[in-house]
Amino acid sequence: MLHFTDIADIRNYLNERQLEGKSVGLVPTMGALHDGHYSLVKAAVKENDIAIASIFINPVQFDQKEDFENYPKTMSSDFSGLEKMGTHIVFTPSLEEIYPSTLNLNLSFGSMEKGMEGKFREGHFNGVGIIVGKLLNIIRPNTAYFGQKDLQQFSIITCLVEDLSYDVELKCMPTVRSENGLALSSRNQRLSKKGLDEAALIYKSLNLAHDLLRKSYSIAEVEHQIHNLYEKSNLDLEYFAVVDAVSLVPLTTLAQKTALCVAAHVEGVRLIDNMIISE
Ligand code: AMP
Image 1 (cartoon, rainbow, N blue to C red):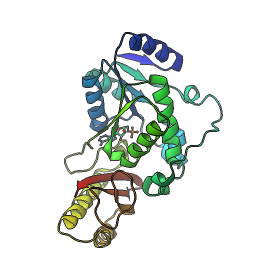
Image 2: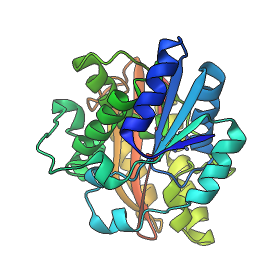
Image 3: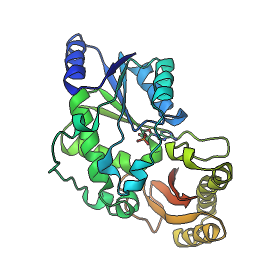
Image 4: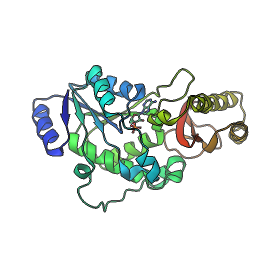
């Protein structure tokens, strides 16, 4: 596995490979890798001549300094995990390499970031858009892989790619979960055993909402029941949203594809999850 930290070096290397006609798959990450990340890497390795994972904890997308500073870092096990998966290149640029000078650019995604993560994490998608935009320019991948766990992020990146005409295919991969249904997340490392057990309520709540909708409960009734469920628990619900899975607009009746989205705090750690249901 090759390791690059400098933009010029990885560009030079990839320019030559791309001239030879090699296809490139990119998996952008913030490290502390788990099987969710590795499922994206596996697809990138299988579908491309060159699979690249980037690891960069992007300060611009954090709204809380503390969350940025406490973000887990497991670089050496990340490297061995990536190597085992057959990753060809790992790209770990420094903060100075990515942001050599003060950022003046500010991206806004209109109605797509009005709700959910965009509403509760001010400036988050500006940061996501900037780092993904930069990585797509540096690597110029044929395909870039993202997880459905961050559904709103995927919609935002789709918008970025369409609006700025990036020549890349985006793939949204299914959420990988632990046995109790909890979506794998780097932040789970900050939970105690008790917290991990309690956090299983998030997936349970999505399944409950799905069941109720199948039984023709209205969205308003479902929202009410989900709020009740969290009130009786140790979790602190930030939002439960029923939105159109494509436009992310909040729904009062089911769409062709409806996304149930949750953000909740467990032991002070903020976790998100979602489920897409078809009509
Ligand atoms: P992160 O390191 O949290 O920025 O995540 C990097 C990529 O991995 C993003 O596209 C995430 O959506 C994806 N990802 C994170 N957790 C999971 C999971 N449990 N299953 C599938 N993909 C995931």
